[in-house]
Length: 265
Image (cartoon, rainbow, N blue to C red; front, top):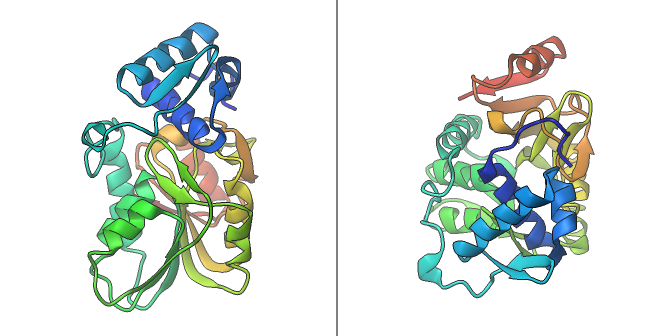
């Protein structure tokens, strides 16, 4: 969960709630209060706002995603109208795309930044792309000259992603090795390390960390100073980070003193 005393934007709390509901289904309001680190009154306001936009359905003392929402009411194709941090994620995606070379075998994770990355590598030649990110598949389906594999598993719908993931997903990766892996997280903390909203993702992420030549973490500046629900790994465990130049200087200094490669965009 997020550390007490760290202020979250309403959009960040809403993203956290939607991600959690997408993974866990019907969830009591008290649980959402815990996983956002907010007061019960704040969570209720957030639920009212999400309900008014048709994103969730409130029940007595709980909430769930509105999976019956008409397609015409869903976010626009790239989501920029509903994401206040779209520009920062877009710059990170463009920077990450420059790290992809023709002929690479890569893995792309879930999340808006990773989906944008898929958009910016469509012109690369001879790529093999493995992903659990359905939105990334849609982006890459417009490309020619690449091989694409969508992993199987249960479908999970978050605030800004659709992902296939279950206990069999890692099993399908057992004999695969990647030149480069690109993933996002929801929290970066100097003491706690990297963390993710979904408890299902850390085992997959750890497997990819151990079975890739180069592992790149994509994190916009708003993810720093936060703890999300599920622990992934220590902050010095990942050798390559792509973030914004405006990211908290304490983290940039720590990375550089620890020998972590930092790419800003």
